[in-house]
Image (cartoon, rainbow, N blue to C red; front, side, top):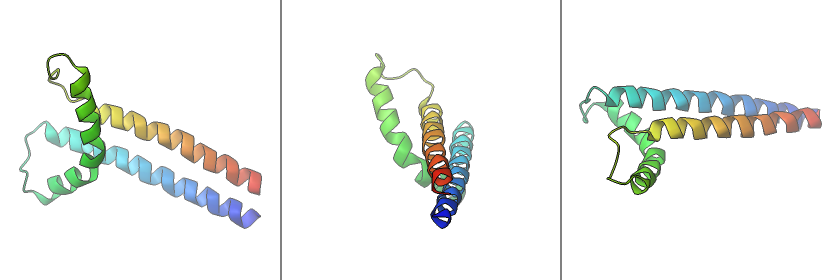
Length: 103
């Protein structure tokens, strides 16, 4: 069973690295949005494709909860980062615990 434990440990490590990289993608996307980037730039398009599927539902819910249609500050990247950290801490810790029990 140690092989399954080592495999789960490796999966947990890779998942942790991917989630951390995605957090940096969200941060870069938020920083680039402050300078009004060219929408035809391939880097901007890639960042939009990577983050919009998760940011758009959060934005729709934030607008629904605000009284006057918005506060002028986009808080969706901050909420998405918090959600990714929650998934990272919960899922990676669970996989690591399971891998140590299988060893």
